[in-house]
Image (cartoon, rainbow, N blue to C red; front, side):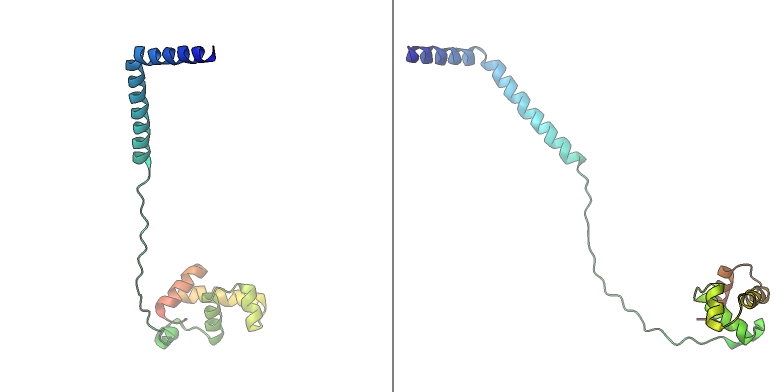
Length: 139
């Protein structure tokens, strides 16, 4: 009985394939082209960025000794203390740090800074630093 059921199921499967072979082939072709389309879309969407590392030797000259432009310093008529304050300004010190470094009161430092602004004809610390470096009166 089991063998008879097996044979009948096998024949039914065989006739099912024979009767619907065109639909099965069309379905397999459709699945193939769907997978192919998804793969092609993934290839087109993938970013085409390539990282290239370039190693290059750069020769840096040793820093030369900085020389203060005495002529410009005389033209500005800065006192020694004002010049010291200007040097600390170019190093990025705040008024409080300048007063602690030079052992001056905060109001004296503010007076020197405002005097620097007048003598150098600038309106801000950034302008004073830029002009001092351009005139080569500070390092």
